[in-house]
Image (cartoon, rainbow, N blue to C red; front, side, top):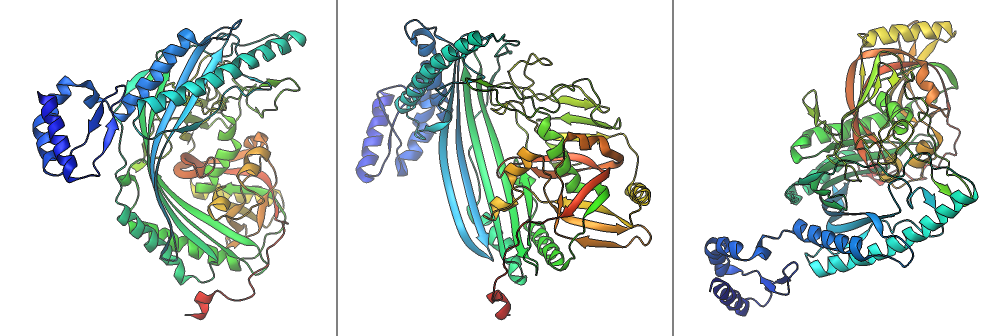
Length: 603
């Protein structure tokens, strides 16, 4: 009776509103109606609680539908998916993420871009063989998996199930072919499999409620306009923008090991970027980044405006600064520069990476710390901890944490370095000589760090660091030493849509530190300080960590770039590198504009 009454209400309202919606209830052939106007109130207050008790389809949420489709297809595949003469999958997982994102970009007080988009992705994993030896870690003629692909954003069980079926079928066939190629290659070259291909981990079951994105779009459009308008007062600035993003990603993960995860991540970022040129054509650029996991984590608009002014003033000062001469001596790294140094020279190498074979060669993977477990890699005063669960430091919010890694393993707080000695690496489910299990840091290409704390036992003050740097400069017969206060975020070039000889890939692949933005000469005899520009660091290896001479006692949190438009917090103290080569950047200069900025003429 209740169902008939609800149906009558829906039909009655439909006659008034031809635009009413029908959605196919998940896993059934029935139509679910959404009444509007006056009948919506009646249905909500009177009928809905009773209908929920009678019809389970009313209780199905979006994540329920995705989870059901993934679970059903996974169980069917485990039981029936098999090529003649080959084994069935021993492991299947599906990782689906639905992202709702609002983004706005403004320049000089005007809107240049605005979007509110929603999408859903699917990443299947199919393994054939066994935990000891399977189709992974080998590049054959067929890819091991199809990678991430789009999934319908409608809550339609049939459409979702069909996409999962096709992806699973393709990945299984590729996995079978790759496993056979791998077996033949191992036999032909008499290769022993030293370690298992996949570790067994405790299955996680964690179901949280999907979180919606709630953002006041008008408020943040106004913010982007206001902050970007700051640069109208600086006509020497050639390019400037403010970009704001707010997103919620709801993730559903299932595996044949009985792992069931529904989790969410909320990210809020605001980036201020600007660029100008010196008279010799050198491109000078920098960005300021703010990030948090809730809107409350971001500062007030006035603080954004203040940072925009500081950025503009900094670029104006650098525009007139003298260029550096080639230098080889002590360098003090402070604040953001210290954090970016540690990110590139230390953290980039603290994730485990596994070599993969192919029919032709072994992939070359940079693993400078792979054989240094139990050995000293840093001064005894330093301890390094990776904590994906960290949410604040000294009362300020931190950005970059997570609950579960990409393989569905719960994140763990890990002591990576204790009193200078390397204890372990951030690992995934690929066993190695030093680690047989994951510590919840898989990123799809091995292990990687999250929020890193580089802590110091030192009590040295900033004045102590300056005094020690003076001593080192005198020992090297130098009239001054350098203080690096800020390094260029590797994302600056992409944010401003311009090329850069020291861009993100170059930094990661070639051990090139990002170029310094704020680099100061400190004269030994007079304590005079002078900002210089046009510098670059010579390529470094992790060996430079052994040249850390003195460490400060105060730690600060800074945002560092990790991947394209991806940031995280890193906490570390200031320190001195005993000797570094810092040379004048000899890259080709761009020609400056022939005419002045029209904003100058209009003033």
